Amino acid sequence: HPAMKLQHRLERIQRGDISVIPWPWTQVSQLAPSLLPGSVSVLAGSPGASKSFAILQCLNFWVGNLVQASVLMLEGTQAEHCQRLLAQLDANCNLTDLEWLKVNAKDANEAAERHFKRIDEVGQCIYEAGSINTYMDVLNWIEERCWAKDRIVVVDPITSADPGGRQWEQDRMVVTTVHKLAEKYSTSIVFVSHPVKGFERPSLDSLAGGAAYQRHVDLVLWLEATEPKTVTVAGMCGRHETEIDRVMHLLKVRHGHGQGKKIGFGFDVQSLSLAEQGLILKDMKQ
Image 1 (cartoon, rainbow, N blue to C red):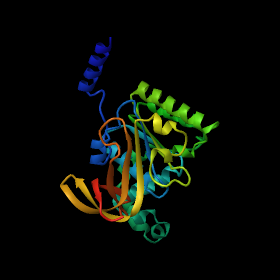
Image 2 (cartoon, helix red, strand yellow):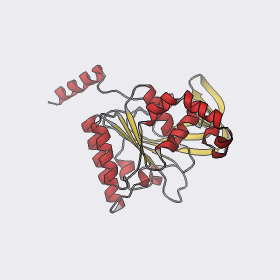
Image 3 (cartoon, one colour):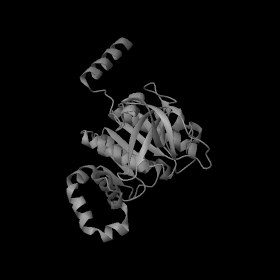
Image 4 (cartoon, rainbow, N blue to C red):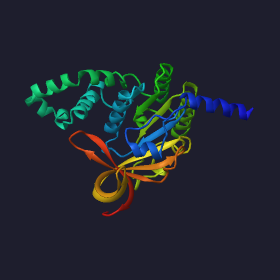
């Protein structure tokens, strides 16, 4: 009976079996409460928009809040990403500079020692590509992590995997399969993606891959790097003007009321992290 199914769902919500995991950014979480059990999300953006730094920031936030999560990095090694994580934790971008590391070995080693425990906790949630090359390899890895009861599973970027067939057919197969896995294991799955070549502006039609990534997912976020500009935002402390250099476009929001809205961010070049500024109300300077 539908009414009994609804009652069962309400009971699961009240017990906390069905709950939303937040992003590390308050207004993104409020306007796009997307990380529900069974959900599939996409975080898109051009190269240089800081997507991988954002994912590391998310992973550190989730682990810090005792959320079991994992990230498959299809580009770069675990050690390289842990080095970026160290720079975020120590708020020192020099820790990603090879020449600085050679000259300042003592400072670098002390930083690594200070954050050793945290890097070990977060780093064990970062997986290298290794022999994972195709969509089927990625799907097998996702199922392994779901079976291990990870609450959030991220692939960064899905566009680096070989479809192994016609792109649009394989994209639809991937999205359909991960939805089933997410629902079966009560997991949230996040794909990091890129735009198509020659795109003009952030939009669903500009997503790389087939239409499945825009039609059959629950959330599409697009992180855009912009020239520094002044905007009016509604932040946690009210309405004010601020300077931003990143915009998070909420292109598709199945759960929540944020679809079509834009949230301003500043990218802190010292900590290599995104700082949420607020919901953009007016762009003062193009």
